[in-house]
Amino acid sequence: MPIYEFRCKSCGKDFEVLFFSISEKREVLCPDCNSDEVEKLMSVFGGTSGSTSSSSCSTCSSSSCST
Ligand SMILES: [Zn+2]
Image 1 (cartoon, rainbow, N blue to C red):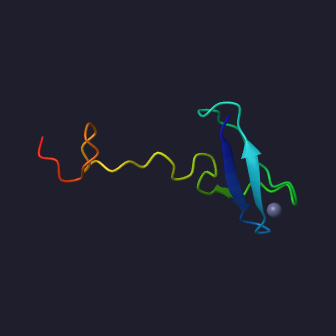
Image 2: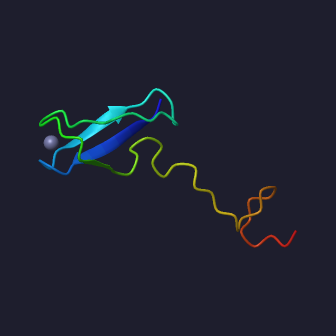
Image 3: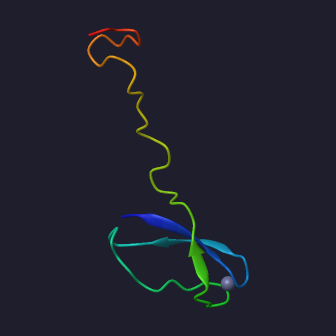
């Protein structure tokens, strides 16, 4: 389940909200002041993992392989 980080525009609090599906749309309220003036920050779920270099050969693990 994805976790998204939000920031309240009213009081400036950062908080995380767990969604049950990635396409779920629901109203997010600030846990401190109950304002719905929140903005979504970058997801803290996943991060930068999975970045692969496309310049290296997948069969011989050489970066200068010509095949
Ligand atoms: Zn708030």
